[in-house]
Amino acid sequence: MLQLNNVSYSYRKGEKALDSINVTVPTGLHLLLGENGAGKTTLLHIIAGLRFPESGECLVDGVDTSLRSPATLSKVCIMADDTMFPASSINEMARRCSDFYPRFSPDVLRQCLDAFGMTGYEKLAHMSLGNRKKAQLAYVLALQTDILLLDEPANGLDISSRQILLELLGRFILPEQTVIISTHVVWDFMNLIEGVMVINRGKMLTAMSTWDITRRLAFVTDRLPVENALYSTQLQGLFHAILPADPENPTDLDFLLLYSALHSPSSESILSILNAE
Image 1 (tube, one colour):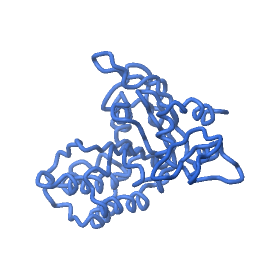
Image 2 (cartoon, one colour):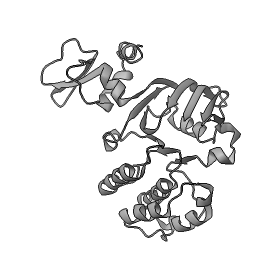
Image 3 (cartoon, rainbow, N blue to C red):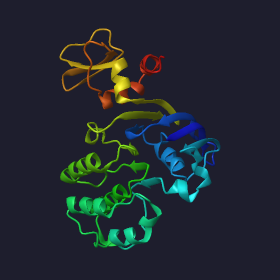
Image 4 (cartoon, rainbow, N blue to C red):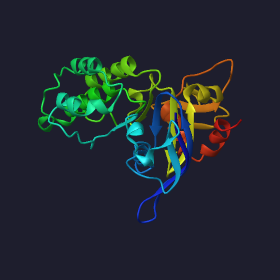
């Protein structure tokens, strides 16, 4: 279980990167959305024990990640574009480090590498960003940690590699894992996502399951303006709108529309519905 209790973090100049974050993140795949500088990466670093909150606590199975205990760190893995792997190849990385992760699966590693058309012996230093990302993704998926944090995992991947990544997430993420994906490429992951977190200027606007959101809000598209819309925008000749949900006619969640609405003057009215008891 991942819990953040009243977590705040400021940089040296006093700028608040996170402001009183309170959220419990259950198992499943969760999307973390926010503008550049909203605090997404800082939040992931605190969960991974790479930064320490100035107040509050981040707990993994009841243990504060800032203590950096080996038992807790073995449950958490973070990967971003600048993640450094202290090995010449992914196979060497597995030999050196996989013993620290109790659920590491050589078979999953092999299947992920095969899916990306790699052997694991390729030299990481000689790879393009995309190929290095594929090798690293194969490794972190094979670790099967309780909590997996992916910061822009689709960066550098071509279209076919993005599709392979989605297939691997669907195949190898365990029911007991919590996966948080921070990305601006929402459509790549929309069919896998079970929960959404939206952060803005260091504040968590909402953190809910997709089911709970669509139980409260409806997302509609029409050629004509939508009456009584909580939020509406026009794109390519169509009107996209958010309304209070109709229990008799549930809709799919439009991630981008929700994100835009929560960064608009309509955010207060939408949040009042989302956060209602």
